[in-house]
Amino acid sequence: MKDLRGKKAIVTGGAMGIGLATAKRLVKEGCDVTIWDMNEEAMASAKKEIESLGGGKVFAHKCDVTDKKRVAELATQAKKDMGQVDILINNAGYVKTGRFCEHPAEDWERETAVNLTSMYYTIQAFLPGMYERNLGHIVNISSAAGLIGVADLAVYCATKWAVYGLTESLRMEAMADRKSGIKYSSIHPHFIKHGMFEGGSLNALGDFLIPRIESHDDIAKDIVEKALKKNRPVVKHPKMLHVGVISRALLPASWLGPVMLLLGGGSPMNKWTGRPGTEHASK
Image (cartoon, rainbow, N blue to C red; front, side, top):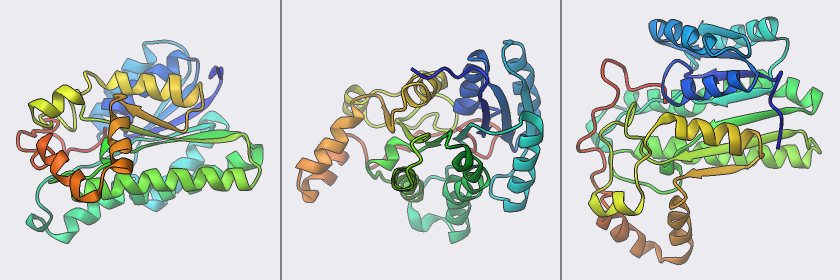
């Protein structure tokens, strides 16, 4: 199991949700952590909360991860603050729900920019240094929606499938380049009861078979204990998500859709409220 003490980490979307919970765990492990977020008020509060835990140093900067120039600036700043970056947690996220034709293309472009394109910028900023040292770990937050499609989340699903593929392909590149010290993990959480996906759920049968996640810290624990410490390339939560992957492999495609409808996959966002007072951004 990898010792994280002394490692330097960046967490995007680090002021709330999974990002904040992960930053807290990293600091308690003895890491220095930089959080990036759009919400300055939440970020100031998060910085104080994380610092109160002791452990590593904490830095915080306002960052729109879709702004390539800003990402490059803050990447340079992170290296000044921490010396290098060993761990990159690509957590920043955005969700817009509804039938595909209910929204203009600009809404879907924003979702794609936050959930996927931003990772090109962050990874490109830090991966060269990791390659030079042959040391580093990039964790990309995908989703259960990156394993199987559901209604009212078409573009969200598209971006999270892409994140899964991006992570796997980059892992193959590192293997081909004989960079054994470079690790990649994709994280696939189901609906979390609070935060960005509050109110989202399958039906009673679906929730029984694939229960919603109680807290963001459940996923933060997976990131730190399973992905970073044990180098697991793919982490799904809950474990019942494996059934969806197996079903995709074994069932004819014509059967998979009706099965998902039976579990509530046709209307999972009917009672969705999201995080009050925010743009439904940051996991």
